[in-house]
Length: 281
Image (cartoon, rainbow, N blue to C red):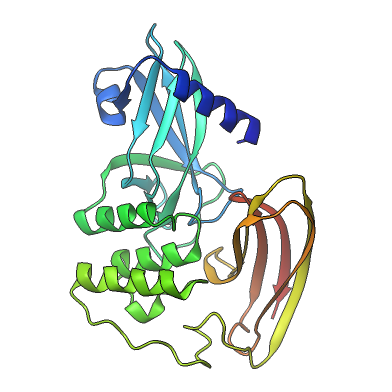
């Protein structure tokens, strides 16, 4: 969705005289119709789902889709998702809008869906997934690989050692949350040379490149590495407030660790893929 549309929608929500109605209530009262599909122009842990809502009444309404909704693919080989940010959509009588939803994968071993793949919008996820989605939302981890590794610890029972992120403080807090939620012991911090757990560890075999770009206003910039199934394997750069101007951002990873097949290093701006390097290793 374009920035201008987001701005107009925000103004509509702020000035709307009517109160919001919860998504399930709006469906039950036959105020809206709803559908969802995969969003290919992003990652599986940023805004992987597009929700289409239509107001089928003669009155303007604002629909709220809360955190923790479960999006189930019609293809069992695809990832499913849990939403990590609430969505508020203001609709005029008869209006239809398609909006991206912040969500995260809950099936690490499954591939990302193809563009347009249909998804069912289910009731809130189970209690632990719901608690995790709320934690990710409250701590503003909904556009980070760190948030995705936190989700996988709950959805896929992955070890707490797999939690990794750019900021050590965020990682520490996330691990403490998971240890309490899952009744697990807090693991020891990673060694300085533990490349899989420490984002600051120096690669043994350096492979890298760069992205050059220019912004007229600050943007959220994210660079991550994905495997052949479009599953993220490592975060390479994350700045939620990249300043305006011309920039060149270098990235580097360990070719002795990631050396099996094709990888994609993707440059994302405000949750949208803008550039990509394909690497065959």
